[in-house]
Image (cartoon, rainbow, N blue to C red; front, side, top):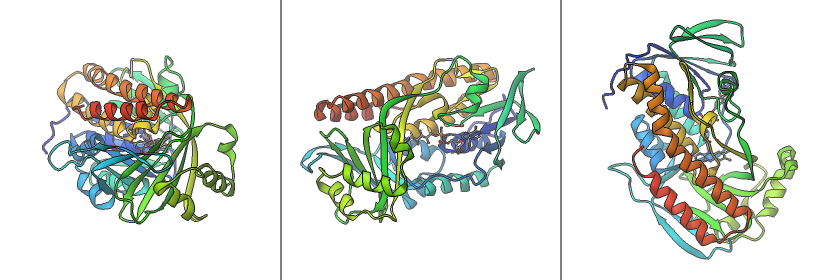
Length: 379
Ligand SMILES: Cc1cc2nc3c(=O)[nH]c(=O)nc-3n(C[C@H](O)[C@H](O)[C@H](O)COP(=O)(O)OP(=O)(O)OC[C@H]3O[C@@H](n4cnc5c(N)ncnc54)[C@H](O)[C@@H]3O)c2cc1C
């Protein structure tokens, strides 16, 4: 696909090389911008979980030219099957292709997805520097003066904060915003070999702790489980995490029961408290702008946080290519993204609240179905 050149800026710094930062870097560099990307992590790692890639997220990855790699190295499914926690089937969410060649749903291991995105970056004029962050950002004369944590300095036409939920860029340049708030839930995940008879994405509802499984490769899945957040869980040893998760799965039937009975200490297990925030406008300050979890952090209930981050990177580049004036482009970016991100965050938080209140699983199922339909609309 031939993408329109960006003439309003020549250089950009992306702070944060996760999903949103890499999508933004690819989108800007493809349109002729010279990009520096920095990440705080000297090894540019990502943890060993899987990730659900919904149809709209796959559509965004198609735009980045990465869909075929994801199909090849991840897994594609055509529907999500909803069960009661004991394994009784409730309903199927049909997930037809969104457009020619774009499947309805899928999954991939996060390290594999990162490698795919990193490989694409290496083919573009993007300079990656690791173990680095920013300590000062000053808008001046239509550009941004940047000081880095190694005390070096540089000047860019645009700085993009893609440094996630605890964003340092947000803290430096967006005093009207606040840190994301805990939603009261936490997410347990285990990456494990695929149960032999599993062939779709599965959700298990009607229990105080809902859970689900996503296939991420021909032989790998990850299972997630949501519980009320308990502070102590953030500090458990690997041994305790494993035993606690196994115990939490005691009531489950179906493939969740299989995972409980077959998980071993070699499988990757993790617990993370959930935070969410739709940050108030403006999402830009002069020539500094935010994308991804730094400005629209959501919970995993719609499995759409990564999709929103990728879409935001694409839309930012599209709007910069459309307008000659950077301020107009940043405003258009914000206006195109705000309502869609608001829908994802508010629906996800509402589903979480329903779970905490032990709400009706049918209401839960229909909230998911309706929201996922809305997300199929063009972004
Ligand atoms: C438990 C859980 C499960 C999830 N499951 C899904 C799912 O199935 N599907 C889905 O679409 N989404 C899911 N999400 C959401 C998704 O992971 C995020 O929305 C997505 O990763 C956001 O991308 P990002 O680029 O904003 O942040 P990240 O991907 O977190 O990347 C941020 C990067 O910034 C770097 N960084 C951090 N601070 C600094 C700093 N000060 N300076 C420089 N660099 C910095 C980090 O090292 C990292 O590389 C889930 C989230 C959680 C918590």
